[in-house]
Length: 605
Image 1 (cartoon, rainbow, N blue to C red):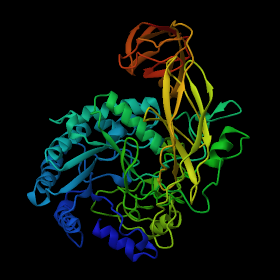
Image 2 (image 1 turned 90 degrees about the horizontal axis):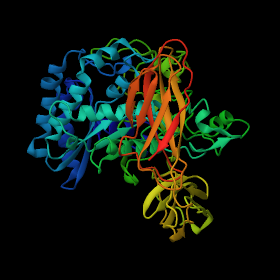
Image 3 (image 1 turned 180 degrees about the vertical axis):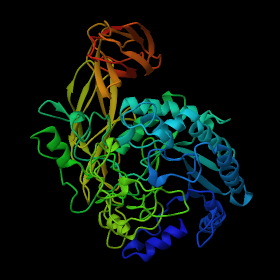
């Protein structure tokens, strides 16, 4: 428990309900290591943790946040070090922190670090000719100091046996498109193996840090459609592959393991300010008159745009910190201490290196990074990291799960689902249904397991599982969840056998989608689907451009381009595709003139 934050929270009306929750300590400048002027330094915080631990296993959360040229796309969180001051970052910031953490007095603590928020993902989305590029991000991408700095931090801190490093991995509303997610995973792997570090120094990744994206959207899923129009085509989702942080975090983990991170790597989700409760919280799905009405009417994230990040109006406290709440998730955590400002709503002179970002100004009408929407920020906010009482009161008011009269969380699990049954069976799929569970507050969803492994989640009392082998038996169980993260016991198992296949055969199709186009370049996704009766061993997609398109980078596949002719083969790990199943690759390309979609040919091996 951070004593400074706890004192602020306890002094607020109603704040005692959460003042005992654990929050991270932000080391956002060199001076924060020593402390002073009424603020605790690193040793003071660790000493307090040793006292609180009283000999028990005890977790301390630290935010490592002072890269040179820090957060190149957000002025409110700019730092004290210039773009070329990597030597100072190493000797004046990381080295002193590592020395303190290595003190034997703190060997009994479990020290969890969140390493350098936002900076690395900025190199993917806000540098190198993208529509949202900034000169500052172009500079940091060119000089390599973000990658080198993060690698150095991981190596130095990871050398301390009781330190567990988690790299920041953005949030779904920023990186949820394949054209952003896969390059980010690759960049994080590059940083994790830079400056003498290895992937062994990475315990996991943390998402939604200091952000507001909903943990779980209960009223729609990415697979829903309205009148034949996919939810992905709504203005809010905008072709993203994820609608909330839980699905994004679980998918990010899988991508990270495929990219070479340890198979046991874990995920943290910052739930400090993504509860979105209060009177504005929708009670159910939106009307099915259009896909936008359906999504906008049902989404609990009430921001004007998913790119809005500063002191958001209407936000509430989210899930309370909890260990292992979902498969693949190490913990829900409060990295951003609720009530600490994201940035000043107007220019404020300071000696902390923090600038004025118009995204913190409630009158600002936006920029390309938030779709030119209003900022949605609260007025009269102080500098980033300073106490913002009005925001804290709003977070209390809109907390979800709601704060009880005694301040205690909901700890009652839903009842166990019953009546699990199959409603349809094919050679490659099984449809399931079950009787609804009940809960003292309300059931928000169900998790479906095949052979003990989670295969999907749904808000309905039915689920269709696909991509199965013919003439094979599968065992299914289901459990219910509520908004507080309580889960029921698993249902009784149901064993279902798929029907016989068609005797084999192979075939595939390839579907081409442009995810973004800025006039001189574009990103595209290609989905490869197995249309045969047997699993593929490999696949190949070919096409010819009608213009001068030139692929500059490609992920999840092997590329050969000769003039207008393009061949993409599987990357090895994604060559095997089950009947009816799909995989995907994506790429970035440059062009001038017309950019017509090509006709693709898919060949399965």
